[in-house]
Figure 1 (cartoon, rainbow, N blue to C red):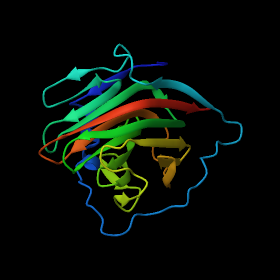
Figure 2 (figure 1 turned 135 degrees about the vertical axis):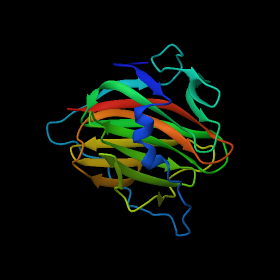
Figure 3 (figure 1 turned 120 degrees about the horizontal axis):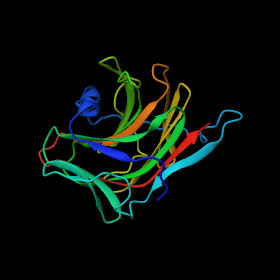
Amino acid sequence: MKKHGRLIILFVGLIILLAASFISCRPVPSSTPPTELPNSPETRLPEGKTQTLVLEDDFSDPESSWVTIPEADKGGNYENEEYVIWVNNAGSKVATLLTLDELSDFVFEIDVKKVSGEKGSYFFILYRLDENNNMYAVGVSDELEYSIVKYILGRATDLLKDWTRSSHIKAGDKSNRLKVVCIGTQTDVYVNGYKLASVTDDTSLKGQIGLGIKSFSESGARYSFDNFKLYTIE
C-alpha cells in the first residue's frame, strides 16, 4: 500500500447529515431504455498539468490506515483482501471520509461490488466537502442507475435531471470500477471505462473525499471496495 494520509469511518456525524438529502431518495427503476453515450476519450489534462498518484490500496494489509469499526448494525472492515461496508437495516447509511488535505483537482478510482442484500441500495462517493459543508456526490445504484448531486448551504440540487440508467453499470455481484475526475469546475464520471456524464459547477472547488452506502431494503446491504487509487492533478 502507498499512502499519504489516513481514512476515518464516520457512522454518525456531520458527513452523514450532510449527505441526507442525496441518499434519502431511493432510485426508481426506469422503464425507458438505458442512456447510451458515445465512448468519449479520457478526460484531457489542462496544458502544463500532470497527474500524480498519492494514495493506493489493494486492501491486502489489514494494518493499513483504513479504520475498522465492527458495529452490529453497520460498519466497515477488511475481509478477504477487500474493504467491506455494510448496513443491516432499511434506511441505514454509512459514509467514510478521506482525511487528506483538501483536494482541488483529482482522479478517484475504485472497484465496487454489491456482496449481498435485496435490490434497493447504492454506493456513493462524496467529493469537495469544504469547511462550509458544501459538497458533491456521485451515486450508483443496484438498479443500474447513477446520479450526481451538489449539496450547498443545506440544500441538495441534482446536477443531472434525476437518476439515470446506463447499460454500462454491471448488475448483481459483478464489480464496477468507478472513476471520478475533477478539474476546475468540471466533473467527469466513468464506470467500467465508459463516460457516464460530465457536469460543471463552480460552487465548491476544493475539499475532502469520502465514500459510503445506503440501503432501503429490510435485508440491508454489503458492498466491497478494492483497488483504490487517488491521483492529484497539479
